[in-house]
Length: 304
Image 1 (spheres, rainbow, N blue to C red):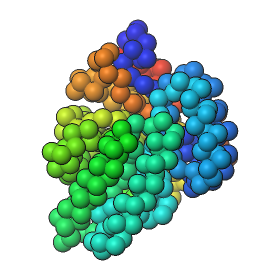
Image 2: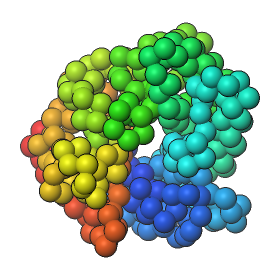
Image 3: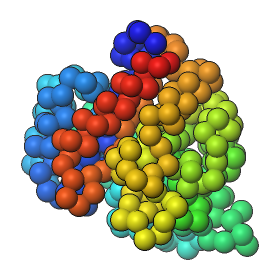
């Protein structure tokens, strides 16, 4: 495909994965956002939490200046604090909802239009239905809170058995959850990540087709699942081309093709987020990993 991808999508990157030193809400938040803002390859960025109000103010200024579309990733914050939006204990569930409401407030100040969340742990088959009901209740509350601020909630699907071990989870269940929330909040939607599909044991085409009516956001990443002793085993988002990895240029190409086939990509009236989620391993250089990721995307796009 010779046309520029900018005609069809907002190409982004998950900031706290590319710069893992800010993953826990600390570190050089604004300065590392500036590095992405200075790279004209990107038209979007996904940021996460920051504890320091001064860092958030500085980051907001950079984002306004850079003309980047902004998304907010609450998943790292929920995972770091063990927030459980499907907790069977009501007080724990309410604490998680209140925490994400704080993330929504941060997201609004940074100019984001969507806030992505992750479910809590899978409680086992006996409590799955009850936990799912609790999770839908949390998503409804958060959608109401976000709507009042001109924003919407996105649910990202995660693995059930490898590392994160989340309730949501398999794509069919996430579609059911989305159907329930969308009855009242049609702006709600799902995010699928190329790196999570192997961990879920799902084929790219099957997952994307199943989620097509609910898909509002997509991630491109890699994972390692064949060797538990591998440094990047599980949901670690290593660079493309790493030995033992599941995804490289051919898998990115297939992902893009199916995203066009299901209509997620293709319209020039609405430009959805499509973001890289890659993390340098210890000893690797962030700039080199990002550059390699960009090359993989450009190579795949050229083959469309």
